Amino acid sequence: MALKPVTFNFEYQKFSSFLGEKNADAELLKQKESKTEIGFVAQDIEATCKKLGITASNIVHTPDNDKDNYSIAYQELVVPLVKGMQEQQELIKAMQKELDAKNIALDSILKTNRSEIDRIKAELAEIKAMLKSNK
Figure 1 (cartoon, rainbow, N blue to C red):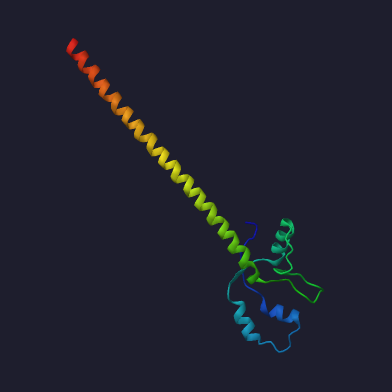
Figure 2 (figure 1 turned 90 degrees about the vertical axis):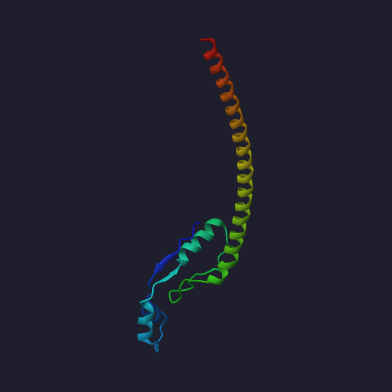
């Protein structure tokens, strides 16, 4: 839940310049910048992993020097996401089973209450009839 997806326009031209690329296609980079992307902030993933005691070396690459950059190995997020979904599914199944049991119990209570109400109504009708006949 700590991971926050973000949308952004990546600054490919600045990144290319940061990497020191000399022959980058400026027009292509400009076109790519016009497209909205979705992802995570590497520093957020790094902080979350540290907080949870997870070594993030296979998920987040942290800069080794001022000419390096953060990056995320998105493919490494697939396994924990699948595991999380499996755990959620088990929880959902358990909760559904509990809900079904409670619904069955509630239906039984309602049926008992309806029977009791019907019995009381019949008794009341008898009492009213007796009272009418005694007038």
